[in-house]
Length: 176
Image (tube, rainbow, N blue to C red; front, side, top):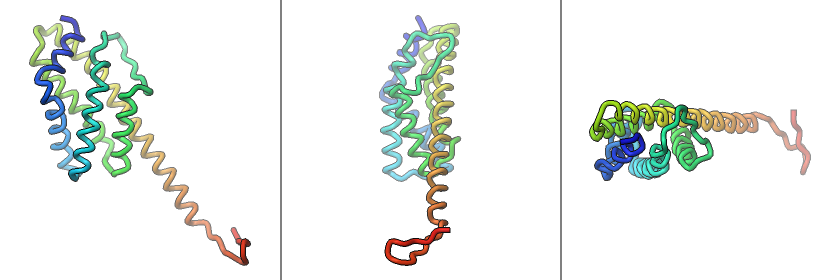
């Protein structure tokens, strides 16, 4: 059995519970550090569903020696949206990275459950690790990029507020 067939079997193994397992890992971890209201939890679950759908064709490709993540693909866009929401809501970057780590744990457990041999398991785990490690790095980069953009916007807003403007006459202002 080749790597993509084994990964397909792992994704199909109890397919209805894949998202549930992943979501329960993430929410249990996050509740210890950040409480999610019902809306946030629902939104997170929707984003995670779309991420799995976008990730599946990438995982099912024929493995290559060095995986390059396309920052313009649908998966990248979904990850950017998710981490952007998290960065704006004050969630820490480690919690964002945990999303991908938890998915990796769930998929690893599924691969172990369906792998017919150690050699096939090893090859599939290496491919899974390449793809998800690169995705974790991308999510962290996207989080930092969003956070930096927020800081720049806040700095500009503060500078605008701190510039004193005196109105002398109608349509005549005094600036330092």
